[in-house]
Image 1 (cartoon, rainbow, N blue to C red):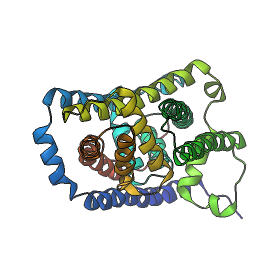
Image 2: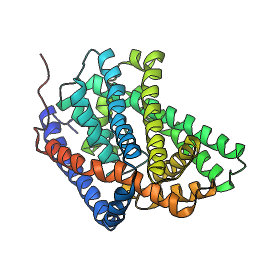
Image 3: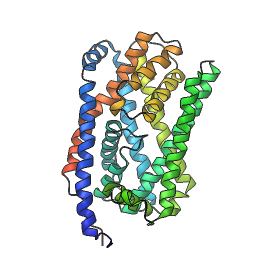
Image 4: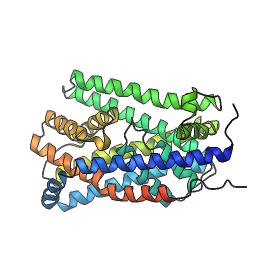
Length: 335
């Protein structure tokens, strides 16, 4: 059988790309419709929130996009294919929207990430390195916070068998996904199972990952920098929950907010539901209540956080996704 020509691959990827982005948009719309009834609750919460704490929560959320973009910037700068931070922040908003619309252990936006970085001027090798190293950094930081969360629960004598089981299962996932990505990187151009090879986005993603420079993957300082950027994202999200609770007059410690946020995030990561669809809210509320926060206050603070992390980025994420869908399929290679 004759191997596909490059032009054929580009046309095939263009078609798959349109379908992929359309599915992500539909997932976002479905989640938004199912959550639409929360808007009245959000309006009530905003009306009674203390503004100084609300401003802090918004600032922390904006910082998460900067941290994600900076992590990619570290890799792209090392790969000698730098991009302006403003462009990377737009890609970060789009990717985080894709991850929420089609969550799959945090992998939903990876195909989108590579495509967007390549469109905006990064070489394929740099885009592949950004994907792999950001994935390793993300799960490294995530795993550390998961272990810290479990230790804090044990310290407060609140660690239930269910929580310990969820953290253990997540740690296995956190180890398996980067390991699988690195294994695929080391396989290079060796063919996979034929049905997988026929899937355009998967083949294009594997081809890009195979081109990631090996010296970047072994750069410990770079890995620590990217993991640090991802750690800042988790801290900012937990800080946002802390600020949301204080905005509603609920006095809690930052450690309490961190435990609730990480446990809720683990449940969402392990589940396939678009936009979390209640699993985040239920887990966060239950964890906060377990740690002594009244259930009504825990629910209100969690819902206010969801306004900032889900509803506010929803519109710009969909607009940027639509712009990505309308762009040319692939820029020409540099001479």
